[in-house]
Length: 499
Image (cartoon, rainbow, N blue to C red; front, side, top):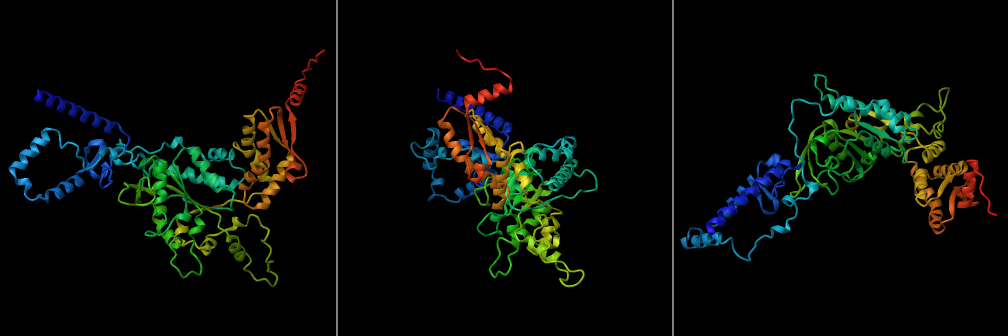
C-alpha cells in the first residue's frame, strides 16, 4: 500500500512541476534569484523551491559546497547515522522542526511585483520598434498641445518638431549608414510658465512612458541622496519594468539649474558640477545598470541594463538671475559716446530670457560638455494678464471648468463675470508665481461659497463679481424659482398662474 501511495505522490509532484513550468512560460515577468537578485536572463535556469522561491545555479552550488565542508564530527561517515537519516527521510522529515519558515517569505521569490523584470520578447527579424506612420506630424502635436497649454507658441513649435524627429529616429532604428543624433532639449522659463505641464501633456498625447525627476535630490556617487541612474530607474518603473518600452521613453529632469557650479565655495560640491559630469553618459547614450523598484543599488535589489541611446531627455529650469547675466552682456558696450546704451534699457523687457546664448548658460554655472549634449535650447515667456485670463477659462481642463463641474454635482450653476476674471489675473500677477497663483486665489475666494451652498437647496446659480474679488461686495446668488422663470423667458414659455 505504501509503495502505491508513493507512486501517486510522485505523479502529483510531476503534474505540479509541469503546471508551474507552464505558468512561468505564460507569465510576463521573469524569475529573480532569491540570493543574488539576478534575473533569469542573466543568471540562467533557476531551481524552484517551496513557496515559489527561486535560486540560481551558482548560488545553489555555492550553498552546497559550503554545507559539504562541515563533517559534523564524522557523522556523515557513520553508518548508524546514515540509516537514521534514511528512516527520517522516508517518514517525511523531522517532525515539528523548521529552520526557516518559508511561508514568511511572501511573493514569488520573496520579491514584490514592483521589483520584477518583464521578459524580453523574442525579435522576429529586424522590425522597427515604432511604425513611422503612427507618429503624429508636428502640426498635429502642436494642435493637441494648444487644447491644454495657453500661449508659448515658439516653445510648442520647437518641442513638437524635436519630438517628431526623435521618434522618426527611433522608428527607423537607424537602418542605413546615416545615424541621426539625439535631439535632447533644454527648456528655460520663469516659475509657473508651464514647463512641467507642457511635458506632462506631451507624454499623455504620445502615450509613451514618462519619468519626471528632480535634479535637486541627485548627488555624486557615494554620497547620501539619489544616484544619477535613479532617473532611468523611475522611467523603468513608469514602463512597468519593461526595458524595451523604457528605452524609447521621455525623461524630464526638472530644476536642472540647481546642479549648476557653486560660486566661491571651499567645500566639496557633491550636488553641482560632479552631477553634471555623471549625467554626460546618460544624455549621450550608454548602457547603464539601474536598480529595479528602488532609488539606490544594494544587494537586495535586482539590476536591469537599460540603453539610453533612444531615450529623449528634456531638462527644464527657472534659472534665476540668468536675466542679470544676459542684461550684463547686452549692456557691455561703452556707456559714454554715440554708441552708448542706457543701463536700464532692458529692465522692463519681459522677453529678456529669449535673448539667451550658450555663453550665458555657461556663466550661470553649467559646464560646456553638459550644454553641448542639449542641442535644442528654447525659452518660455513670462505670463501676461491676458494669458492669465485665457488660462482661467480656455483650456480643456481650465480651473473655472473644474469648479463649475464641482458645483454641478450640487445642481448649482457657477458663473464668473469678465471683471472678476480681470481682477483675479491682476492679483495673480502681483504674486509672481505664474499660473500656480490663479489656483490659490480662486481657492481662497471659493472657500465660503463651497461651504455655504450645500446648506441651502434653493440656491440655483452663483455669479462671482469683480466687487467680491476686490473685497467691496459679494457674489450674486439666484434662487431656483427665479432662475426657472429666467430660463422660461428665454424659451418664450408663459408660466400658468394659479387662480
